[in-house]
Image (cartoon, rainbow, N blue to C red; front, side, top):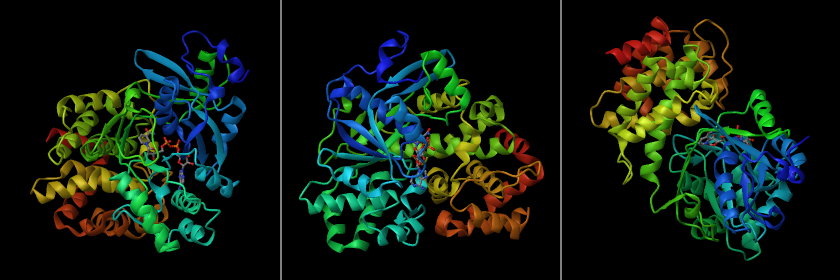
Length: 489
Ligand code: NAD
């Protein structure tokens, strides 16, 4: 039998469930990008807010692409389980914060209308880095992006996240309503500022006045979000359903750790996030840089080099002591470029990351983290490299990580098998790889010339030299040996 409102009371006693009357909850948030991460992170916080009585903050989720989440969740009244996995065991919690879900492509105008409803005071997003239709290197809207071109010609039936936000804000302005707060929860650099720039640039293409109104009146707080949420597998679905005694078709898997840091700038109110464990601050930047350059950078290094070394998951990769040392080395290289947030101890933070990566109960595939590298490299690896070069410091570990990415996007692994490279620029990279062949001296400069990813940094001679040398070692020795040599030096 399927999980649903009617059988919440029949769940085993150990399963945590909504501690409030769901029938009294009304929507206050529209979330764009109803993936696993939102359901295991922000929705859990909102669930706590609802439990403390703030019943006007339920979530309506929107999928901008596939109907799979709506199709799985609608038959179970949008209830789903968060499975919190640690070496010691798994905790299960059924979340009730999601009230409804919509598939944007089926009825785009209806989603715009929902976002323009005065009851909606926050529009949050986890649409992945590429969902913002921007150039990661500059943070500007990509005006030639096919979805942007489409949305400018179909203003009331958009396709892209910026298109939906602008159309809904225009509707609110026309109705004399305050704008909702736009709460980006993706791993973009300066995410709030970046999304504000993208959205106002998009709006100005439609009308200068609208662009100005959004720039003046809407809030785009920056956030730092942290919780590891791997893709759910069929085996996970079976395990959760067994624990529940009811079938949950769409649970999410995660770890015990969770962190959400938010700038306290909301134009239309917010629930008491602090009471639910959110850190409300005036400046997210130190938290964001700490997370992108320590966690995400070492995660990407483990993902590319671990994949090439034939490790399936991050935990498998971390069991190889040379790769565990590699992750620590990426953090050491990045640390000197950071000002740690007040009250956060660098050593303890690094140690906790290494422990989290090694969590044997989380099946986080290297392939999943390797996805969309063109969108991730600038904020995860390149910023720290630039800062180290400016101080005359070596960049060997980061260079090996970038070289790992280069070897990965050639789409052929060390055994000559095809790699399923998922990236908006995958075809461009494959063309470059075909032209250059497996020769570091040709491939590295050619990929460094991709402006959208590297910008002017791609022509910096010290970076070229370090990355070309690292790629040469990867071709000569393979990832395992190259990592061992680096960390043993
Ligand atoms: P997911 O694959 O489960 O969901 C991704 C969501 O984004 C889906 O709703 C999908 O439809 C949507 N999407 C994908 N491409 C899009 C596009 N071009 N335009 C609009 N929407 C698009 O992934 P997830 O685990 O939910 O992660 C989503 C994002 O959350 C990440 O990219 C990252 O920025 C952030 N995040 C994830 C984690 C994690 O551990 N999973 C941790 C921190 C931050």
